[in-house]
Length: 213
Image 1 (cartoon, rainbow, N blue to C red):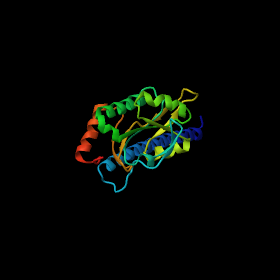
Image 2: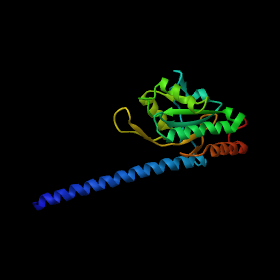
Image 3: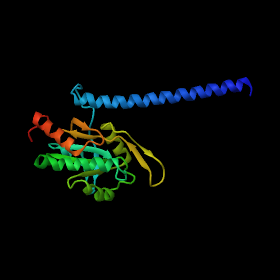
Image 4: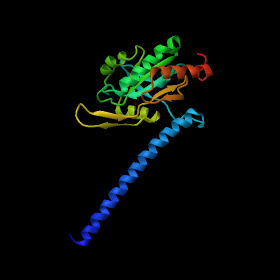
């Protein structure tokens, strides 16, 4: 092989490796900044909410719903999809069980599930899915753009993985606790047990973080 072709091949390979490294670094920095933003907000370092924001979507009964409809109540918000094989059902079940453990106190907290897969998560699909986890769970869907805006406000990562009707969705799995004004209070990482969620909410309540009702 001529030296010029070898040199060109080496240059192309080096460029590809460099591009791959840059992408890896960018993704890492994005995820770290996302995590840091949540931590800073939870510690009260930021003067403005970095997680949460307005949304307008459609619930499992076909009604249009916005974040303003939940003012005066706390929200437990989770983004996922009904075809999720394990992570979403586990976290939604933990949300429902945590509310049950809270008893009467739990009535002040509204559980909300927002799909990141509006293509398959229709109103009827969510109507069948939501009651599996809690009778008060509100499940929301919408247009792809509406979902994207809501996910962006909550700093939720998601992307489609695979083709055909059996594709999966890669996504972050975080349960957000929002206050009566829709502002971020704290979050629960993927896989947090129900008792830990309930205990942390009770602890916040005892400290006065959740208000008096």
